[in-house]
Length: 507
Image (spheres, rainbow, N blue to C red):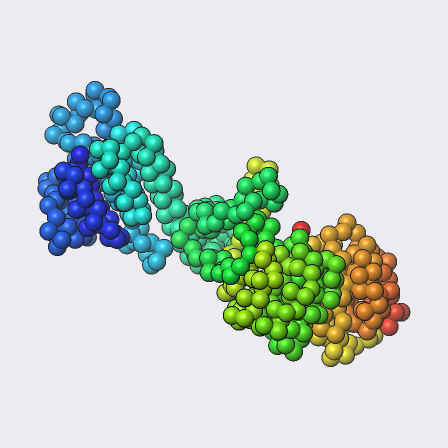
């Protein structure tokens, strides 16, 4: 068997080459791969010896030759192919071991590999007769099968070919993304490029999908590190699809609140916050977030801006259970206590969440793509509309309400008092009902606090429903044809009205 070795990543190369040599296989090597084999004292033939053509153009042309690609691409079951090989003096190549220039690590024209992908694709196309290995992690299993069987089975060659095409597809996607980063192309295309090329790899198999009869997994972009890759699970059962989905929402929201106070805590259920608070210490923040809606908090996701102490762990085990607890870290006694008292609760420590360039959502036969949502304005950009000015305490509640409201599914109303969410209504088809739901859940606790609406009030009835909760200030985007009527209603109620000029629908 003739084996062509041409690798940038030389991990495991010498051991592979030694194993192949002991099995009696002939090795052909190019460029730096040949140098590495020479240093290791492993017999081999250089590509230049096979092609009788020197490497040229600073290495851009070395394997692009009929004596290489003819040997790889020949269909051994086709007599005319075999005749062509004989006529040209070309020997078949049975195994190609190749990995590519590390373009993702240092994108540049010089690291756009041409010869490597060409060899990989040629060998993968001819998987009926040729094996191809692109991942050093496969060297061991390939050697084992060659020792045991004397050749690679068709099923192995097919599996390796699939991996090879996935490898080159991901490589091309990274090159395309690099071109999209050029300022001139960004100016021409805007934030949404004409095509999007995603290459995803399975990172985790999940306990199940949205429901137990559905399979689920977490994927990440090939070559890109996700903050989820650094999450450490200290206890509890396996994570499910919704555990990750809800924990991601909770973790992002608690980081959006972290600058509003020394400590922040969030409780999320079905991707919607049901509790959120800022406070002087993490125990108080958790208590106040939990008290926002204790019934809904049962089985929810708890996210904390600070490490979990033993004192807080006692609170967590004394209250109705959380399915997932995510925090920057845990004291050892806290972990032991949670493990012993909450055996099924997933205990996660995590780094800060990372941002995404684009937000994608699947629809039938395609995708919707947009820029990721961000809270683009702050207090400095907001304006008071009407005759009532908020107090400083009300401003603080308005800021918290606005940020929490951005995480609630539309239509949404959030009531906040004293640094904690006391009533949240979301996912409704009109602007009145979420206010009524939020007021019902607040049960009188919103008096003197603040309310946020994720979109404008089309009529004053929505504002009236919120005012019934007793809030002293309301923040909303504005922009309704009846803004004047709604602002006049706020003045009538003696409520400060703040307009942000920014809608924040979340569907």
